[in-house]
Length: 124
Figure 1 (cartoon, rainbow, N blue to C red):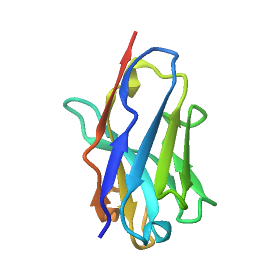
Figure 2: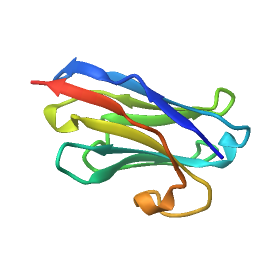
Figure 3: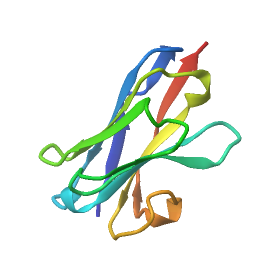
Figure 4: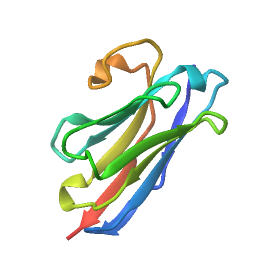
């Protein structure tokens, strides 16, 4: 069992930056591949970024590639999402998720545990 708690969301102006954190409970955090998703009002929840259990592999949606960076610190049971050059299209609730078995990062169905989400609002 893994419990995930996101933090770091807020209101930021276009062009600004935010860093989201996702703190996980449980001693087995380091065995989970992790992902970030986001859901804008009236839209589906979409993949943003993923990272392997070791941190050695990362994956990004085309819309955030070059602007967002996913990382993790297994000693702190935390995964991060550094978001730069934010624009209004990045406004959404951001969720972190844990994937216990090797699956495709891009699909929600691959993930076993989800956080409650943190709101990111980018003002233009």
